[in-house]
Amino acid sequence: MLAMMNGMFPVATVKEIKLAKDYLKQYRDIKNKLELFERNPPTTDEQKKIQLSLTKFTSLIENAVEQVVDPNVKAIVEFRFIKGNSRAATILRFSGWNYCDKTLDRKLEEGVVSVANTLLYFE
Image 1 (spheres, helix red, strand yellow):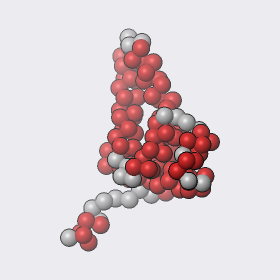
Image 2 (cartoon, rainbow, N blue to C red):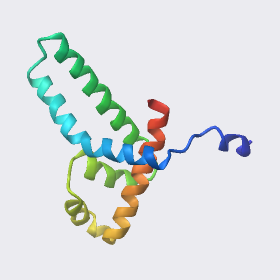
Image 3 (cartoon, rainbow, N blue to C red):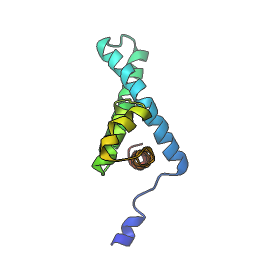
């Protein structure tokens, strides 16, 4: 049974992982644009299409981050990418967990890989 399940779950390629990381880096900027549309509703069809596209993008990323299994990894990814904090701020925030900067980088990478694998199902 487990042997059959191994082939059922696709694994993101290096290129897909890099793309997921780029999406995570873009998330905060796109979320800010979406919030601007919420404060100033679109008036043209083109603006409505853009708003819909931004909504889909942010939902995809939020759902993918929500699927990260390890709660520590999820917390780090949310703080770094969803809340839009810098790497330095992330290191400072989680220094109380006795994680060095390299460990945090590995945890972030685990989160990015998890997001990339989840996006394979949503896209």
